[in-house]
Length: 296
Image: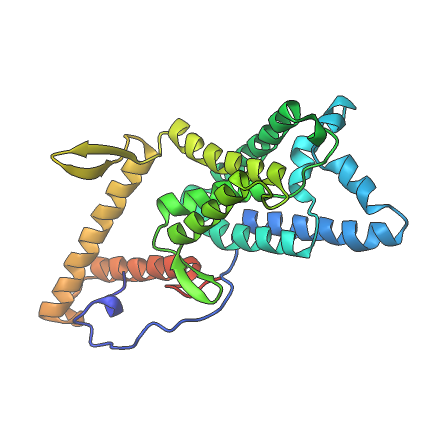
């Protein structure tokens, strides 16, 4: 938090709502670019060259029959093939806005691992459905939705203050996630459904895999009930250490800001000025993906 955000700063400027695109992190940018390029190749160039659309989906989408025909690349390639404009637009917007904060917080390698773990497990869940319901064995699954739903769950857990414009109304990411999950549940139990039971299974499996992955990494908040109240206790591990470090840094920033309030900016030492400048830089980086209610 910068000194301008403090109540005694004298700055009464209201945070404006802006529609903008934050600067993407490296991995998110590459994933979005690869998906878009493949979509263009699939929908325009290869079809113009005479490749049937369904043939591309059969080769690179994920299906039980495809694996039986030794197309072992399908559990990965299906994540980069999309069925239409709305399909890729939704997935890429979700990946872009939610994935940026995930990568900045947890790092490039962990983000990539999480993305592909959720995506592959979502595909495996679809293969399980194909075993139970043979009519799905020849129907390919395509899209990054399994991985994206895992990232959505991560945002709901770790970045609940994020705001997303849902039909032009800003809502917390947790509310947005619950809306999507409610739609998934209705589609699952409805006799007519949404006509995409395989996709809904993949979405649910991707989200559940995200939760289980955080448990496996020792990063999942654990809820306990004590003294008649619901409390949260972080497991020991990297996340807890990071939270303690951030709290210590914030305490030092608060001390410097209080000194400015009492003695003025000129009273700061060189080290204290450096602390204040670093805190302001971190605040700007945090506000970029969150947009303070101004993203998506």
